Length: 103
Image (cartoon, rainbow, N blue to C red; front, side, top):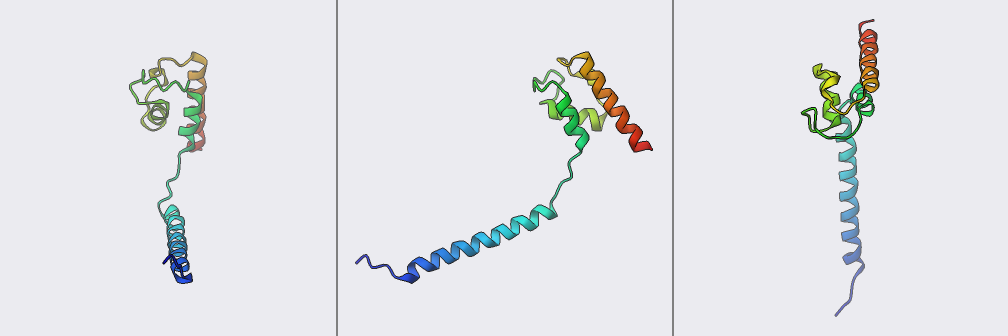
């Protein structure tokens, strides 16, 4: 009554293994095809911001504010809790990046 044959065990194992292999290959290929290059300047500015994610600047968080500073030219002073020395470091960083890009 509870007799299990080898085929009843091996067939599902093989189907799952082959399916997993196919999906693994697809994920690897699609990760290369849809690769999105990240702007390192945005990450650096995000790390330089206070990190409160308070939204006082009108953006949903510090990463959105960093993106706006780098790509849209939003002034650093829009970040309300930032200290003056931090703001100056960000401005200096952006100036150096601009000079490097223009050279």
